[in-house]
Image (cartoon, rainbow over all chains, first blue to last red; front, side, top):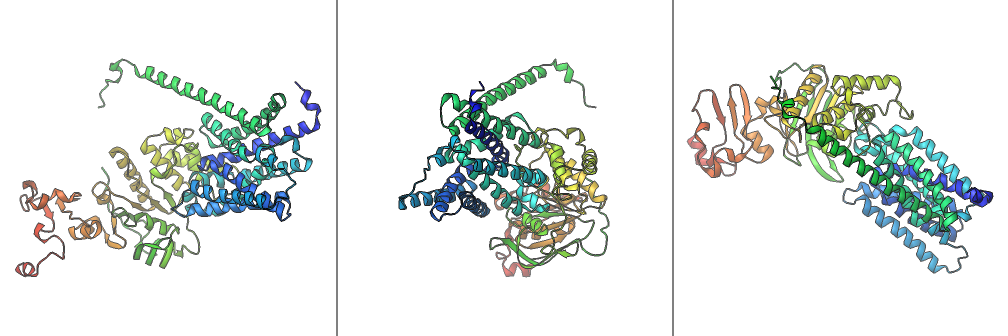
Length: 290
Length: 308
């Protein structure tokens, strides 16, 4: 059971996946509640384009890809403000264009020595000390921002328009969030891969939402569930020998199915209980009002 | 029912002043050349058809529209200089009812900007929120999810959020739309009470007889200000035609001013009106309306005017 822990690369990967899982679960709450679930999927593709560009112009991967992702997120937010374009369409246009640019560059410059397989599907064995440091720094910064901005982010997520009337600087909130999101996606790419980040961002908050009606509880629960899925997914991947990203996502999806079944059964039960409670003798209600 | 007590508005500086305001969104003009002064203690209803600029007028006061010409002054300061502190209650249908927030969490949002970077609400603010919830009769619902409430309770939650920072000015966007009659009366009672405690209130409404007729002051809008005054002054067939583009007879009955909201109610298809509405049939009933044959200013023939 403790056999995998003797390998240092495994322990490093496990820590990375746990932190990334928690981080994605945390920011996922805000994404899901803004009904922008696909932004994770889209932005991870956009960041892939940015990664290629920064490789071509030989800029540091983290800096180049984060900047690229941030600009894409800002562009999406700005496009969404035009009333005629919905968030889903804006995400579709900007991120696929960005991804296509990456593909175009790859096919144009055939001298690539770097493998982009890891970026697409995630490779936990490739997590270096530097990657781990970047993950921890982004996670800590995100946690701090969302902690101190708790009230601002809550109001701006619940009702951005009215929040503005109440003086909440929603433009700043959006900008900071785009930055956090882009950084999260860049550091998560190595562990989860471009194609699987979306699930890590969407599943934990949805599971948490099924279990609570309180915002604060949802934030905490989603973070914990995300971290748990990261940990469980990597641990399992050692035994069943599948790619780390796929393993994390499959663990979260299983959790989702279980919780969905539980909450459906629970609401069924409470409905039948309520029906039973309503079956009281009619004279109990026959008291005249006056 | 509601207490239609007209009360004295305080004299002095207007709390809201629109000066030759032309505004809209993304280059499209919604309101043009609007001049309006709201005094402290006023309780004003904004009336007008859909798209007439009721909500835009509220947003102009909140400083959230593009101003093309003119100026909006709130508490004497232009909204372009400083965003004023105003209580705002949005239309209930714009709320995301599946969002995981409790009643208490929503009410506390009203105090977000007091200590914006403190992750929790200080004890004093939570006490204020509870006081407000107590006052509005929703204190025992504090931990409930916002969806698990009746329409009247939901309205009170958002009213509490608006009032928890004790604003002097309260704006409400159709607080009586989509709620049942009892809730509507509850809400209007509550607003009248608040108004009597000194809060200046501006609300939009679609309900002429049930709501606007009981307010001390009414503004009729249709891309511009058509009329502004007490319901008795404003509700004339002429004003209503300019506002709604439809013939709406006004009935005066035992001191009440009633507007026949359906233009077909009076003289269906040009037929003579039904007997109970016959002019002068009863001493206590007076109907004001444009004669069916003279409907529309353009259609009025000059010789007819001479005959009168």
